[in-house]
Amino acid sequence: MAQVSLNMVEKAYGTAKVMHGVSFDVADGEFVALVGPSGCGKSTLLRMVAGLEEISEGTISIGRRIVNDVEPKDRDLAMVFQNYALYPHMTVRDNMAFSMKLRNAPQSETVARVNEAARILGLSEYLDRLPKHLSGGQRQRVAMGRAIVRQPAVFLFDEPLSNLDAALRVQMRAEIRALHDRLGSTSIFVTHDQVEAMTMADRIVVLRAGRLEQAGAPLDLYDRPANAFVAGFIGSPAMNLLTGEARAGRVRIGKSLEVATAPHISGPVLWGIRPEHLDLVSEVSPGVMSMRVTAVESTGHATFVIGDANGLQVTALFTDRPHIVRGQTICLRAKADKTHLFSATTGARIDD
Image 1 (cartoon, one colour):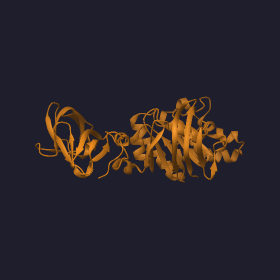
Image 2 (image 1 turned 90 degrees about the vertical axis):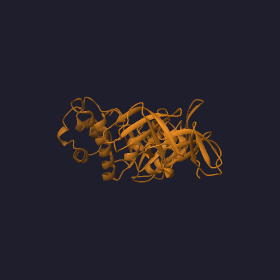
Image 3 (image 1 turned 60 degrees about the vertical axis):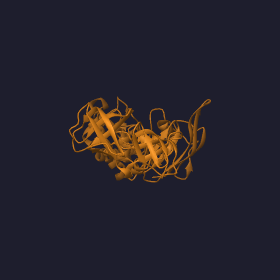
Image 4 (image 1 turned 120 degrees about the vertical axis):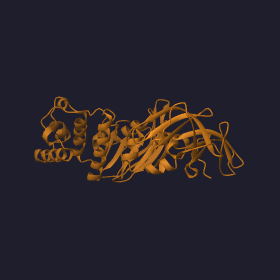
């Protein structure tokens, strides 16, 4: 396997720049997820690593080799696409063996690799079927098997689960991660679903508008987001970010809520608290917000309560199934050691 390094990578279409000096490394054997909203550049970045898009500035290295001018077929990587990209007239066996045939590999080696990949992915009994006779999950396994057969240094995944139903997505993300661990591969996984990234990746790279916002271990991003964008993007449901004014060791939020902060902080801020870090209390007191409930959503294991706190929308999450109904007024207290503060002008994290 191999390390992948991006150094000040830029991409422009004419005068329109879409990637702005992105730099990060993927260690040998690491699983890294690229996340961000639609149009942030994550698939473009993946395609540049693959050689399917030219780089305008900067360098991309695989192992110790700069691959800017290396053809995709010579980069020693394999890509798994969102739409499977299987040949409909070929059997599973022939789809998986296709890249080996293009390289004129010996027949015995091709058969051995296809059979091993099929065994790993539970496809042995489907090798003589056409893709149209497979389920979505089975087709995705075939696409992964085709990549495994090549035995590449790097695996690239471009939103491979987005066409699957919810239950199958959960199953397949576990299978992809298990496959990564089994092969000891280096993997870069693009997804718009931050839950996929949190559950699968060793590290997450968060992109916005072609810029790297933060890179780190999933829980590091969750617990200490570098800015308000990452705070709002990582986590489901999203962190509550409430506009406030800091002055003399207090942050005033809305019309009545005041919370303590460091005395040196002043000016407009965003005060953040995750929904699961709001506790239900019996009455209003200093540091407690009053909220009129506008929606209650239960998923069985959790209850989401959404409401209006003096003109600010707030979401709380409870796992003990409290009896709360729409129209009710409840009182919430934030866990003091779980709050976050960001600049309202730059979005950057403010540490006490």
